[in-house]
Image (tube, rainbow, N blue to C red; front, side, top):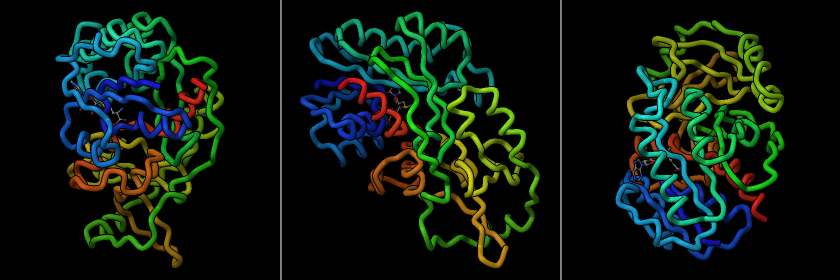
Length: 313
Ligand SMILES: C[S@@+](CC[C@H](N)C(=O)[O-])C[C@H]1O[C@@H](n2cnc3c(N)ncnc32)[C@H](O)[C@@H]1O
């Protein structure tokens, strides 16, 4: 199979196609982040890198089989103040490069991904351009992480993946030390949430999400934004974010139960973050931890993509 991958990040698409058991003849990638490209090259020296999508002549890839891509959701994200909700912003410009690639390459199959929380106008615009409606899959079905994403594809017969019932505690590394500051913070925390409100919210979603969406919120620090909530290890992790630098809050801090009933709170390690995305351990090794968190948070949950690509068989 010949693949063209736009906004390739750390080449999660390559991992997924391999896991799906489909032989790869060519894999051509467009990506501008030098750290992501380093990770890609460290793991897959045969991937051909082409840089910026705006410079791409995609007619060179005529006859390729599959176009992959998830353009940056930064401009559309619900977390962004003043996010774009119409089809004339930067987010759409980037997405339209994917559409151009689809027309120029004439790839038979395509898979486009973006955040579930983007505005309905943007979702409708993407659906109109690609000619298919999105399928929402929550990574929680295949990993210990809540991560709702929309997938637009013409790969046939996509169903929801089976629930593997993985919890955060299943991916934690043993014996990770915690610095005094982080431990100190934990003493001032109070349990402020039960899981009831989240479970109720989940019930409003589709059935598959309801079955898995049972994180247990147990407290918060700072302003209590999404990244500052403390989740129990007996539930699912909050969705990993791309802005991994600048402290644990962005990556998620977790209550770890100790035998004496006390608890500590710490940041996820890069390996734990990799496991939440179903990446191999140390897949992103070789760049700084800050960049690792960023690349992982930007990336795909590999086993969700594998599940979809198996439809090609
Ligand atoms: C949401 S991430 C996609 C990550 C990827 N799906 C993965 O599994 O790692 C979007 C990526 O688009 C890249 N990007 C942004 N603008 C780009 C451009 N003009 N050309 C190529 N890549 C770009 C970013 O650096 C980022 O890695």
